[in-house]
Amino acid sequence: MTYLDYAATTPVDARVLEAMLPYFSTHFGNANSLYAAGRDAYHALEAARETIATAIGAAHPAEIIFTSGGTEADNAAFISVLRRIAPDGGHLVTSAYEHPAVLELVKWLGKQGYDITLVQPRADGRIHPEDLAKTLREDTKIVSIMHSNNEIGTINDLKQLAECVHSCGALFHTDAVQSLGKVAFDVQDLGVDLASFSAHKIYGPKGIGALYLRRGIGFDALIKGGGQESKRRSGTQNVAAAVGFAEAVQLSLAERDSEALRLADLRDHLIARVTSSLENTQATVSEGARIPGIAPLLIKGVEGESMLLQLDNQGFAVSTGSACSSGSLAASHVLLSIGVPQEIAHGSLRVSLGRQTTAADVDAFADALVPIVEKLRAMSPVYERYFGRASAQHAPKNTGGQKDAGV
Ligand SMILES: *Cc1c(COP(=O)(O)O)cnc(C)c1O
Image (cartoon, rainbow, N blue to C red; front, top):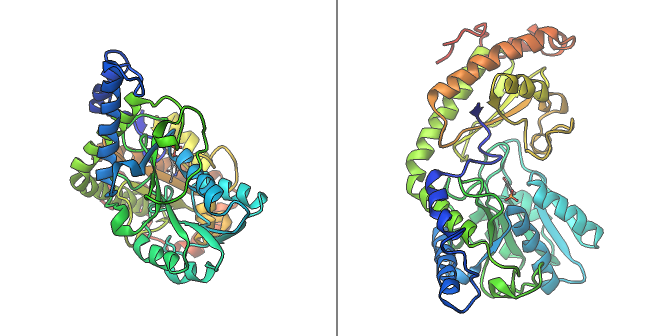
């Protein structure tokens, strides 16, 4: 298999696994027990917390709450904070292209009586401060704008957005799951009050993440019980996973800059190969700050699902959009939100590259994709009519799928 879906999840790095293993057996103690084995686990847990706090520029390790992942961190950021600062309702703002962990949550909060405003990204794939400013009100309690988008890879200028949010007195949360370890992210520099992270997007284990909660913000735990995580997330801590998360963060940071350059090169090479070999094909966004490993493609006149299944037959794992929206035939809410027309949005592929991806993988992928698309287009009764000759005049030269076209 050639795995090209690193934005959905990543394999656990061998070095991460090695760091975790002792905490399943040798150091299996409960971090809350007072004897030596408990203390060992406690120290490992707190060291992991400190590593993550330092990595994101938090002022204090106690600002890190371990959660079961990015989804729980997003839920806690809204629900636990709202119970303290606005239990009876108020106004919440988020963007129309968030991960479902935020979008479905605010939809539910809307049913609980909160007023919800969705700010639209522009065609460049970003939230603009002047658009956000227009949504803010006196009773706005929390604004949540993701740092980088998991489908199209665009990065938002959070510093500007946070200033705008704080001027109206609201709290600013960001889903930074796709940014951690890939691009610069510092909570104090950006001025965010709350931020969500997940380990399995950066070669750590699934089932652990973290919420950054700036000191002084009221918080009523989602999960109550033994009072772990300073009463903010009860349940015996998963020390092995926390150790793995911290190791994954450290490795990602140590390799971040060189890996970012390598992945951006591979991404640009992939996009160039595909767009030069196939007419009516483009990168969904191609300008400005982006996380390096995501190649979002629009391939007109073909269903993303059809390409995905045929690529799967040939051993390539890619996505049509966010993992949660595939499996349904609805076009990606992310692409629609940036103004991609419905019929074109159906032809989306998200190819995401990572630590194990090589130039040979990218070439093999392009070699496989080109004939698949040509065949699907040839079979399509509407392709020629809607996307054929007339629009091809404005498209890149069709080089007929030759293997080294456009390199
Ligand atoms: C993967 C992802 C999540 C969910 O994280 P889990 O740890 O899988 O719950 C949330 N937000 C974004 C942007 C993601 O990519």
